[in-house]
Length: 399
Image (cartoon, one colour):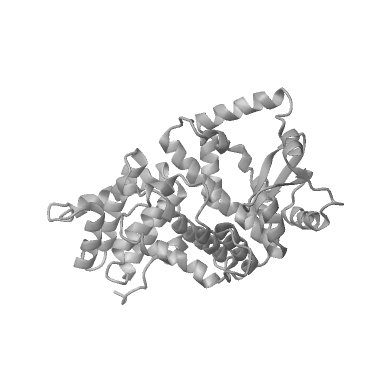
């Protein structure tokens, strides 16, 4: 598997959309004009505020960099720097004059070793490999910027998926899931000593607690999470665990479609819910959920009480009543699917598909007739059929 192929599907999709946004294009044009006048002074600032790590000074650091550069297929010359800081941090700075700059805090260099450090090195190089510097998120999300809130949400969501891509590049370099998880534990906790023993299963259990607090249908993540540019560390570890179990890491692993669907569901824990959204995309998604859930639930022995109860958690008490014309709703379903396919991202399509499935699975199983409708909706949304199998409940008795 080539390193270029590891990039998150959602990262690529949102990246493409953002490059077409007028505000992003305007800022990139401004940056290009400045660069045309000469270097931006990045290297000069690094040389004046940090220490450049030469091969003679830091042979082990360069050895790790060389291994990751080769594994990732990086062709640009790389300079390494260290700066004084008690916090664990690293960064990859946009190239200047044909050089790429990677910098590390002093505390990280002293506390990370082996596969932990290879992961960090690969992660930072991954940002360059996948062109993440093409989106000037630092300019756009800086204090005092006045960008459209919807664009800010999209930038934040893209940034989280960009971190997933960079994490995969880091894991590709490290080739050691436990070491990668330990690195993320250190980054999250700030700990390096043996005062607290690293426990992978306990760290991952935090994801289960996050999911439990988010499991009610239609419940949105807290608004404070929406504009976070990095996924929560336990979510990153779980996403990397899924990566290591997928075909991207081993030939007999889970299909890529299942991996991407599972990661999208994980990061959905940090995103606003479309049930409360006010834009056209949210409205289209709600309309599809309304029709899709009813049509799927009615596909086998009509809509039962359990399915009705979950449906009304989304749309309110008595939203499912005798006045609804199911035949008309069924006839409108293809148009509602097409509206979502045209307006929503892959992740949003997965999100509404997952919610339709929650209604169908309210009674604990899905009949073959319900699964057939679910798969048809997924196909029309441009999603792989395996996604339905990933999110569906166990099949019930055959018709």
